[in-house]
Amino acid sequence: MKINRFWSWLALFFGILYFALPLIGTLEFSLRMRRGEYSLDAYRVVLGDPRFQATFSYSVAMAVATIIVGVLLVVPTAYWVQLKLRRWRPIIEFITLLPLVIPPIVIVFGYIRLYNTSSFLPLTGSAWGTNLLLMFGYVVLALPYMYRAVDTGLRAIDVRTLTEAAESLGAGWLTIMTRVILPNVLVAVLSGAFLTFAIVIGEFVLAALLNRPAFGPYLQLVGANRAYEPAALAVIAFSITWVCMGLIQLVTRFQKHTFAKR
Amino acid sequence: MAYLEINDLQKDFAGLRVVKNFNLSVERGEFISFLGPSGCGKTTTLRMIAGFEAPSSGMIRIDGRDVVDLKPNQRNIGMVFQAYALFPNMTVDQNVAFGLKVAGRPKAEIDATVKEMLGLIKLDHLGSRYPFQLSGGQQQRVALARALAIKPKVLLLDEPLSALDAKIRVSLREEIRAIQNKLGITTIYVTHDQEEALSMSDRIVVMNEGRAEQIGAPFDIYNRPATRFVASFVGTLNLLRAVVADPTHGMVEIGRAKIDLGRQLPERKAGDPISVALRPEAVSLAAADGRSARLEGKVRDVSFLGSVIRVNVDVGGDRISLDTFNTPSTPPPVVGETAAVNFAPEDVLILDA
Ligand SMILES: Nc1ncnc2c1ncn2[C@@H]1O[C@H](COP(=O)(O)OP(=O)(O)O)[C@@H](O)[C@H]1O
Ligand SMILES: [Mg+2]
Image (tube, rainbow over the protein chains, first blue to last red):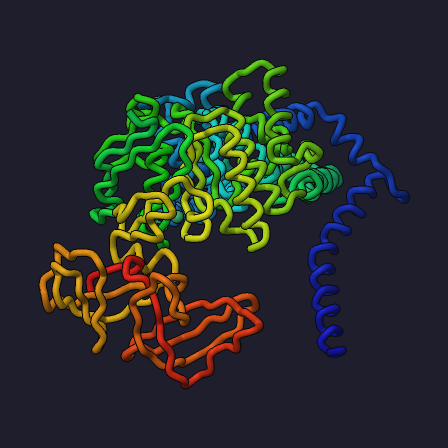
């Protein structure tokens, strides 16, 4: 028993070391821009860079759009699968997992072939068209996470009976969706949303190949040309992801106090 | 015409007919139970009335209007589910108000109705609780209030008490019946529990394999079961093998004993094997007035149940179970002794062998 615990602690220790060391190293390095002392100079430079502000707000806007479209797509689909297409569930799940198997580079080359300026739907011909394409690409990348989260949320409630109860009380499809289903899977939707946010903020391949001014390509650009700033940027990007994870934890806990799942 | 009319209702699931030729007329304000074993089609029939399943054929009419083509949310039917199905994100008040809100009623009316409904189920003080803060019995009462708040034409309940423990089941079924009486709402109550059906209903529909085997008042269902299935499913029954001796004079032979039923058996011929069925309470050990029929047997088992003693008597290889009152002055029968079983011929049910 005692020995057992010792090995567990040791494993944990090495695990933490494995993940934490590079981070600590990066953090430490990012603070060394000024010679001989620690300072936040690298952060000041990065945050003051207008390209940082532009690319970051572009990616945030993209993330928000992706989340909205993703929720509108995934929640009704997952709901419908639970309600009427139980037998289809494995197929739908397989489809939602595909983006994990197919590399983004393949997806984006497919997009460029399909929607180039000489195609039936020349989305890449204009900036807004490309933005739209990029956003849909993000929706695809986030699909596995979003679908999982929402599906788990839906499984925790008795979708079918709740729907029927609401129907017998005179509710239509929209009312059921907005007043009964969505509020009960809100936490799941939010965790899906935060994951999506984290993915979109750091995404590189789609944005770079579609040539959009997103945060990911900017990270790469700075990383290739500067010494201390990339480290600061990496720390910032990590913090964003962590804040998202923390928010997921927070909303999950918050729900348990207001209403429990049966 | 009846308030709720069901004609020749049928339902097929993937080629399997689970509801067959179902006919029923329900008067306004009546309390009807669907009683039958699990899988006999009670829920499916109820769901067709509610609109959650489309009938394969047949007609459903409520208050003179054909509802088969109406969606569930257009039928104005109150539904109570076994699993309560309260909206977890809403308080008790909000749950009860839901149907009225959807219908766009004015706020004052909603508030008044919610108050009235919570009074009806005696949960006035719990309006601001969430479902997870309530016991099962309380949740089901809220579900009832929510269904009643929209003043539905018909109230449907699908085994609403099965998830609750025995004590609450009994008190809640009395409460449901009282509320139903008070509001005079036409009600269909699905259950597999015969005691529930017998104690609550104006009429019972006994269902078996998708068919309505018998429709009648609890008294008739229990005392004059139309089929062997009804007789054996509702209540306990003692079955004795017998043979028709003389159909025109109502003579049957049970073992070596001949019994005069005092009524003709027009559908039977002499020599037909039949089953003679007796309810435990129709049989006694003491010979009393009017119990002219008598069979000899051996006491096999005596169990003391307090105010009642249950005695098992072997009559020609068939078991008869009967209850006698525990009277301190008379000692109970002893296992192994011979006993005479007495009953009135008119209490005898004749069933197919
Ligand atoms: N959606 C369905 N698809 C296929 N078969 C079903 C479906 N619903 C019910 N059945 C079948 O119909 C029969 C009757 O079911 P049900 O009405 O639920 O019975 P009960 O409520 O009396 O227990 C059962 O054999 C059941 O398996
Ligand atoms: Mg059922």
